[in-house]
Length: 454
Image (cartoon, rainbow, N blue to C red; front, side, top):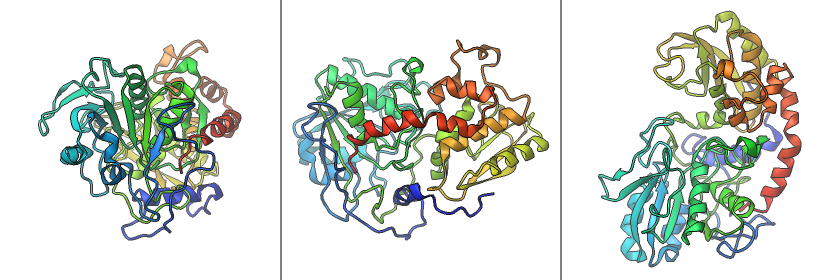
């Protein structure tokens, strides 16, 4: 068992990045440093050329500030004279948890701009809708602004939806995972802005998973709203860096893009200020949930509960047909696999919603003991393998509709490839699956390097 694992040599930067997001107790300090441009970053020129975009906000050495804070304190000229549309949710807040909606409204006179519309991703602007729940257009009670939905019937803004804006701002906390839908709202909105002659501004935020990447790069044949473009399962970029990559690799460099960068931020040596965790969606209530999600999110593809409807979503998984003997075998497999940064324990629960709702279920909870050493995607593959190996009733959630190579199953959408399903069904060693994604992951990492800011 890995109860006290040694620090993983590649994860020091991730440990520090997590500290900046509140992973350490209040008062825990990590050395501060100025954020410096990546040596190969050429992010200037307001969207001209391959992936370029005007990035601002890198001053104030040693003082950490979010993109939204740099916009409001130093870069209000970016919005001068513009009718502004804002894509956000409850994570769009400063370090004092003041909503970007309220902050922009307060600054309208000083900045000579007007906030005219709000746009909601999955779960909505106020974050109350359940996973997959349809989000309707409505008038925001507090501000009187129209709220236009970018989840459900319309995922890409139509010309009519953005006709009355000159500039779109994106300020949402991503959690570094390809199948987390906010980044595809970003992608679609960037495309719509380019096609309709609108400027696009991204307010940057930390990636809680750090700068490491894991998993298969998406096969374009499996493109969907849980993975539209060829990035890995865990992408290792901030949302600003991801926007630059989208522009350069998939949108032809045509977006008039500006990234308002964080200052005082470096993934290898971030500032000492801790950020309080604002749950980005109803089933990511804690930082530990965000850390495991890139891997245990794969459990959505099975006929067992991934913990939705319990107090430990994605940290627990189970089903009524999982017995104590099955649990012992699963835990033995996981603890025997040299998976750093976690301990597994038996846990029984009755999910209140989603799969296995109302059914007393045996299962396993993962306890994260070292976030920086933990390997979420590799661990997720081992979890799937242990379930399929030890519990005869475990199956893909589609059942008989997921039996052939021609079928497209949810595991294929989530993993971004049919190879993972095929290798798991063949009983291949989980680390053989990890080895299988290494070559394409290296190619992505090399491509992504030119878009890194920090």
